[in-house]
Image (tube, rainbow, N blue to C red):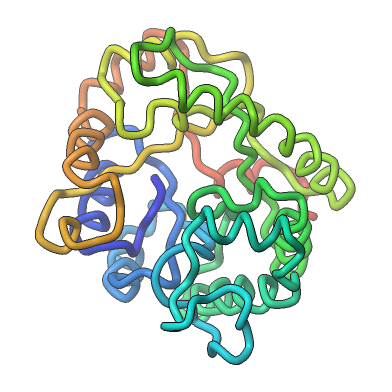
Length: 280
């Protein structure tokens, strides 16, 4: 589950989905407004596997504006994804600034007593090869062995309105190969498959069942965004508002246990995967 630390309602939903449903891991936003609340919930729920959800595109950074001037707007807040993409493409973002901010976010999470099991990024900014190189370098530095590879390769037939997202997912293949090469060079790991991007904001129980029933052999990461819709989420700069509660109701459904067992699907976490493989 993405966006742990975003709002208290998102935090509660992620923990509740861990207790009753199919969520096993989450990624924590060090820049999130509800970071401290998330840390406390992680302490109270040691079974929750926590990684880092590194952010360059929303809200306030951890680094002083003077240290990352090319990542922020005049008001000191991050640029949005489109502006960041243009700046990076134009060579206007020195990668040491990205490394400085990502490092600050990872270190804040570690300082809170959490050893991250995996890395991913808010709105998937590490698809860009330059940002991916920073992420890979930091994964090695902080001994984090698992990194998300956004490569949607197991989705159900698309309905009307989902083609645009599928096109974006297909375009991501142009960048995924670069990320995979860098990860291989540094001995980092990623699940064998990934799903959830195309269905973001459109998740239904039938669609999720179709996706899970068609999983390939190996380990698949399912991305989701559960949350309780409340005033904090309503005020947040996200397109996923009420839809987060819909996703929560789906992934927190206790009936998934029997359904998965009948199909030989086993839930796992990045923490368990790291423990089952050789150290870096």
